Image 1 (tube, rainbow, N blue to C red):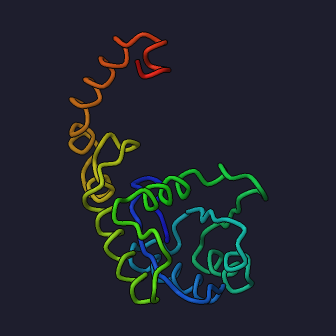
Image 2 (cartoon, rainbow, N blue to C red):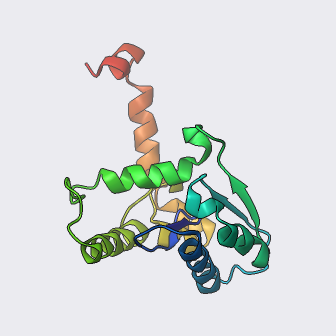
Length: 169
């Protein structure tokens, strides 16, 4: 998955077997073309997986005018946006509890998840608007949608004593 950190929108995705640097590079090129990102000063941050460290993938950001950066080894919070996305994915009620039985099944489920995530999931980090709204709406109008809810939430938290908040009693 290619994730835009500003809007949290999943820009593009692909389910492939086996994973490879060549397929990752094609996905990145496709996402760049789709979003008009080529030659813009952007940073492509990824984990240290073999697909992301392969020679083909290493050359891709440079050819698109981007800078590549990688998570530090064994530091799980170097890529918090991707970690949060995967947590949201795995905690969906319709997330399969057993392995997918086919590659087509995995692709269909992922396609449905991406549509839901981009267009229906109201993201707490975006003041409770969807990633699609954040990307396409001007900031004042877009950010206004979450304000009444967050004001009420602040009021509730402020009026709960520390012991009650910690224990849930």
